[in-house]
Image (cartoon, rainbow, N blue to C red; front, top):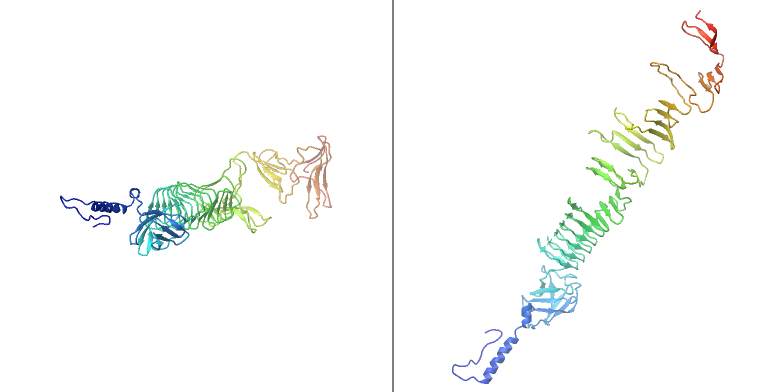
Length: 498
C-alpha cells in the first residue's frame, strides 16, 4: 500500500484483458501522478514554498499542494510581502492562524520579517518557529556570520557573534561582545554594549554608542558623533578618522573632526587641543598649533612647541572664570614637591610677576652669544648690557663699563679703585653742546648743597670752589708737602710746610 497507486483486478496469465479494467488501471496511474508535485517544484525545492499574502503581522500562504491538516514538523518557506511591525501569525491553506515565534519562544519583533526576504518556519505544537535568523535578535556562542549580508532592521546580537565578512547594518542594531574581522559598515545608530573587537576597517557613518570597552586594531572611520561611555583601546597601528565628533565618556575625550579640535574634560573646545583637567605626559610632547590646558600639566620629558611659520606661545590661565595666580614651576631634585624655581604671576590684572629660586644655586641671566640683555619699564628701555659687557642706564649704546644717561643718586660711597695707572672722575665728557659741570657736596638735611666745585659753560668757563655757611673753607695738605697757587702755568704763591 502507498499514498499514490495500488494495482487492482490483476490479469491472469493467458487470459484476455477487458478494456474497462485496463482503462481503470491507467486512470488510477494518472491519478497517482497527479498527487505528485510539479517536476519544477521538485527541482527548485519549492514543495512547501509560496509567496505569502495577507497583511503585516497576519500572513497567509497557499502551498502548491493543499494541506488537509496541520502536523508537527511541517516546514513552510514563504516570501514576505510586507515587513512586520510586531508579533505575527501565519495561516497555511486556510487551516488557521498560528503565532510565529523565535527559537527562544519569544514573539518576533518589528522588522524580523522584512518585505522581500524568504522566511522559513517549522510547526511545533501550536506555533510556527522561525528557522531563519532573526534580523533583530541573534543569539548563540561565537556564531560566525560570513559573507556580506545587509541588516536593515534593529537586530540584537546577544551572544558572541563573529563577523568574518563585510556586513552592512542600516538599522539600529545592538551587539554584545562581538568580533569584527571584515570591513563592516554601520549607517545607523548602533549600540555596542559589550567589549567588541574590531580587527578590520569598520566605517561608522551613523552615531554609534559604546557602553563597554571596544578595541580597534586597524584604521577606523567615524562620520558622525561617536560616544564611548566606558573606555576605548587602540593598537599602535590604529588610526581613527571622523567626519563628525568622537566622544569618550562624559567629556573624558572628544575629537571634533568638523572644527578640527581635540578636547579632554570639556564638550566645548576653543582651541585645537583643549584640556580642562590635570594632565600628565610621560613622553615627549610636541605642539605645532594652539593648545588650551585649563588644568595642571605634568611633562615627564620634553615639551616642544614648534612652528614652521608664525608665532607660537604657551598660554597659562586663559579662559578663567575667576582671578588666580599662574606660573611655571621647575623641579630639579627628587625630594621637592612644589618647586625649586618658578616664573609666577600673582592674581589679578595688576598682579606682581616674579622669577624666584630656592637654595644657593642663584639665578643666572645670560646670553650665549654677543646679544644684548635689555630691561624695560612702561614699554621703554631703561637698562642694557651689551655684548662687550658694558652696562647702559638711560642709554641704548653704553660707551663705558657703566654709562648712565641721566642724573644719578647714590646714597653710599663712590669708590674709584686705583689699581695701577691713573684714575680720573670726568664730569661732562662727550658733550654735544657746551654746559656747566660741577661737583656739589651736601652735608646737612636741608636738601641743598653746602659746597661746590664747578666750571661754567664753554672752553674758557670760570672754575670756582665755593663754600656756603659759616664753616669756612680749608685748603691745605696733611703732610709736609707745599701748596702752590698758579695761573697760566706759573706759580705765584707757594706755601711750604713751615
